[in-house]
Image (cartoon, rainbow, N blue to C red):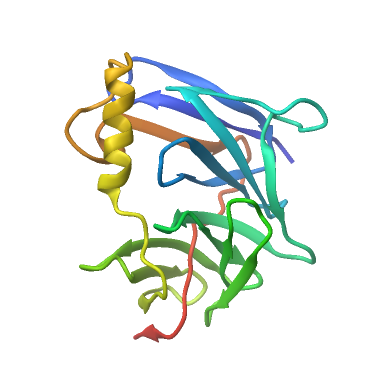
Amino acid sequence: MDVGAVYYAKADGSAITEVAYPMVTPNGIGLSPDGTTLYVAETEAARLWAFPIEAPGVVKKEPWPSPHGGRLVAGMGGYQRFDSLAVQADGRICVATLVNGGITVISPDGRHVEHHPMPDLMTTNICFGGPDMKTAYITLSWTGRLVAVDWPTPGLRPQAQSGWLKRLSAAGSRGLSEGGGAAGGLAAAAFSRSRFDTGCGTQGRSPRL
């Protein structure tokens, strides 16, 4: 199996920087509510890693034996795989989980882990919406469905990370947009240098079908 990496890129395409390497099929990626921590999920290893952000495209790295400088937040036992992720307003990370189909919710320190099952082994993606950010939209890839789920804790609003982007811009990151949201001026992505593509991320409770 080939290894992958995490990259930081400016939205205008003027620069791209390798942030973490090597990683085992990196997939889901997200930021903490205060924008100071980068979370990355590895699919085949079912591990969640954290990297403190020091500057745009720069993270603080742990010494060996960390393979890439990340801090291990959680690793799942048995055979299951991680896909995409989303972050709640309280800072917990919701990771779409394959095989053990559902959403695994992990505290930032990794001490608390809970699993919300979904009716699909290949739960691949999640995002939050609705007026109170307590609706989770989840992709169920095995059965080819998109469901809306009432979620107990609100998801992180994009505006919260927009403020972090503005602070980075004021600190000298010319490539970041003052205007709005993580998509406005920051493109952080996980790429797997592999011949195989895996899914995304999910979470859920009782879906409204």
